Image (cartoon, rainbow, N blue to C red; front, side, top):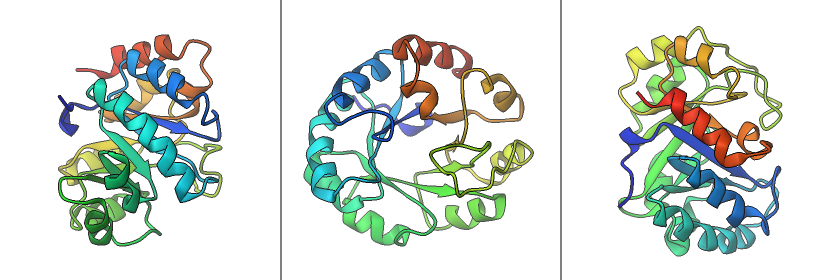
Length: 209
């Protein structure tokens, strides 16, 4: 049974900048064993054909664990790969177009970088938003970090699951939660951990109410 979005707290991104397609199924298994609630495949330097082939292998692994499986940037691949949905950025196609391409019932998330942007994006009808980057992060080097000051405000203004992203690690998670975050996205912290499963379990221990 697929975990509903309101029950998802730890969003893990399987980024091919940190792992290979060959390693991805095993890494995904460790993430899920550790309690990652929702997973995104991010493959910025891969072709749509390569992404589709890998997503078709990974989606069943995630779904068997009850975790939604999201494709970054390519809503048109959702139906063909059996994925749960897609995530888009501010500079990508309109959200309504992404939803049409992904198909009925697909989850669509969108990145936001300010409170005002989050409010505007909410009116477009996403299922969740990403909010950040909180800190400088190598996965988004061109984005200026926004810090922690607006976390509480965005949760007051936006009535959707909000996943705080950008430089989130186990070691700074307590201060992020103290600032008002309820859900987070972690990329390199998970993928570079010596014990991925153990790392995710520690994060979930702090996250889950």
